[in-house]
Length: 448
Image (cartoon, rainbow, N blue to C red):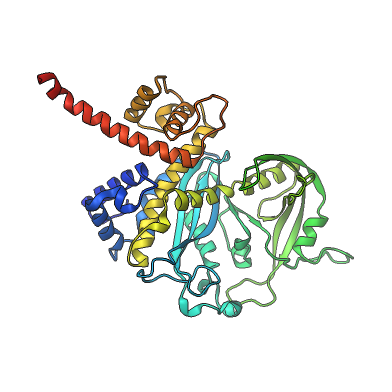
């Protein structure tokens, strides 16, 4: 943790522990009066920033990434809503309503190729200027550095700085990142992009070709089919988890620069590949999957197209991270008086949210890993006493933890999610505290 005083470091470490143990409680309830006041002073200090707050975590994440040949980095933006916090200052509009207030956060979450979250490599926080509300029509005249699209460039620059060498890195982004300046920006050779198409950008047609595609969407639909891929579609509200067969098609394209562009947007054409993934037999009444992706990767085979789609699909992990941050850690209930303090507090909660997500996916993707890789020895000892069974693997540890949170005990139950793990962590923390108090009381009990 990049802080200016060892006492501050100790306070932040204790705050992290308390918030992780009680993610569903308010900041004040989780930390108590003393730590709450210490946290407010640290988060509100002028020299504290989100980048400094996350520096130690980013360094550790980069170290974890070095153990892998390839790392997927899911990058996405979310808003954190503080509209009801009338007294907070420095906030800005977060949606189309002029009275909405909050901050926006863009996160770059590193993942293994199997989807296990390794940690954060970048996080940007900002508040929109209320005076600019309703001026979106003028955005074409502003330099890239003056737009929110600059955050995409800043994000991958920080990823590249954190991982200058080592694994191959694929950045996966949704439609908001489909910005020509972002796609065209110079990048290190080991860093590639996969971005979902947002608009029908013009593409260059080969000389003499007739009836060729005039834009990238048409190019995707006319691209030659390279094969079919079976994927697992995660559950959504009102929609159970299911399998889907996707038809994959791919083609090389040269995307033209926007006709109306500012001086800082490069001219010419950009060589990319377009990949189309279309669901062949969607469920009755359901909307079929159709992804149009632009990538800097060379898609010259079915295997390469499959990998591109797989890497893009992992982008959903960062949405689960945002869900955990909001619905689990309840960050929209934080009661701080101004935006600077809120941003720094959110950075701390982001580390907590990552750890909760990491616990969930480690047990799913690496079930036979040693239990000591997910929980410390004392907590495992308490879990074994509670469950009256040995806890030796990551899967056994997470299921025992989830059962403390109300997860069913039958072996056929599906893997637990983050909500039940939050409840289990809270109970486990209370049980560990009771265990330690009982051990301290033993000498006195023996004297009696």
